[in-house]
Image (cartoon, rainbow, N blue to C red; front, top):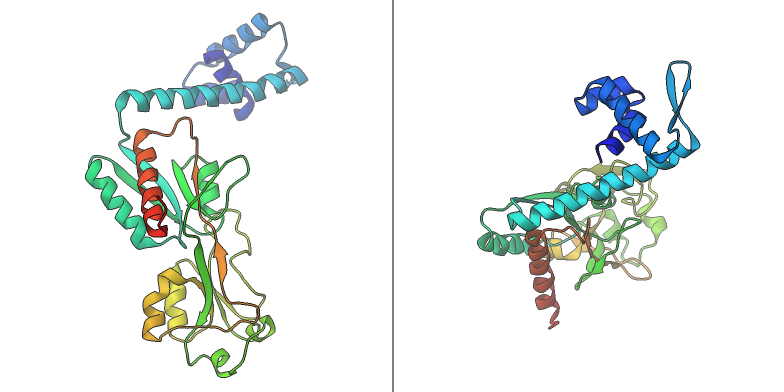
Length: 294
């Protein structure tokens, strides 16, 4: 494994000296490890171009397979550590901001009573934020309407209903008729910024001339309640504002509700620790109770 690790480091760092620095080894020991690997396998992983070592076609194949081997080994070691140590000391989860906050907090409270020694790291994400956290192995699992490529997700009960709203005194409500997307284009659209590094325009529901993009759903909600614009917001999160009359659903032609299914997605189901599995079970069961499922 150490020879494979040296090979990968040489490729990724661009040379033996840089690889030695990364691995905290001498340059000669890194060079010897790679040379021994080549000898045992009977292939040349590198060819010299001047002073620079360049991968051969065989070396490129070895590099790709070695990376996978090292990742698998690290994953196996992590699983073994969790199995021997019991429940994790820290669990990280990514949760789409559309998901009911009160429900998440209740689940965390129940889990905390069962495992008070476990710390929880919560990433509140928008659009591609949760998929990115999964792909970077930043979290143990995520709750998101988007399943990243290469992952599988479990559909959770109780999909999120998202509705377009504005203050009752907003000009859109004064039209006194069903609204079209053309009507919306003349007014400020309040959207929440995608938290993923490769931000998309999917938070924008309609193309408008004026848009306020904020980082927090609470800011968008506050702006809508003050009449600054219209927004698509999860119905469950604005029940109080709807009841008090500070927000009113916009009567969009063709229906004004969007359904956002939520998925529970593990970063790696084979190596997920017992603590993360238990927290996921609590969330599943709470949602089943709310939906009336057994």
